[in-house]
Image (cartoon, rainbow, N blue to C red; front, side, top):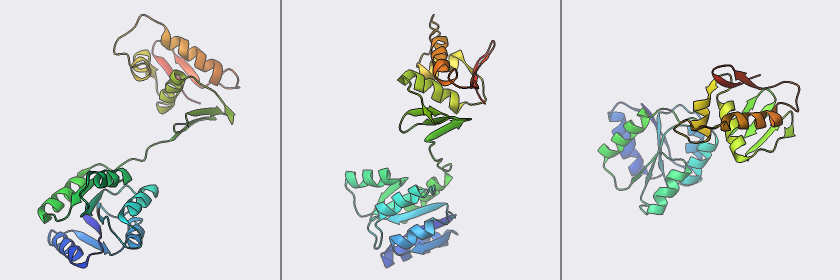
Length: 223
């Protein structure tokens, strides 16, 4: 396991690094936040240990910068700050775990092993695009060929689900569960009605339709 330790206290850093090396881990040490950030950009670590109070760049800013740079390495905050708000701030900044000083090395190593076992964090999609149709999931906007298309909330959920499943057939049951939260088959043509409205806004004003009916199965959005 490859570990990056960002800790400015010399004794604490030596204690952690020595203990991890005894376990057979490859350890890199950075003594300030700025160097820790540069080392983290290598993205060559299985886990990071980051102190909260660091020179050059504090721990919270370091973690936020690492996450903004799309580095998904699991991060354990190590800090003497034990207030609930401090722990919440650390986790909201992008850390995966928080351990308070003083700590037992056995607990530290166990937490690092647990973090390293987690699957890599996936960056959350904020935009979807199929052909000339685009959705901004943050701003809740839809446009096609650069033209804004105003949609009702349910229509937005419907086209988002179709785009997330682009090139695949989605059934009426799948749409009822994902868009309307129905766990049963209501005696209604709500799906067909909303698909028709969506086509009027997304397909009809343009040359090429994107929403296709798959006879006997459901619908598929594709180029």
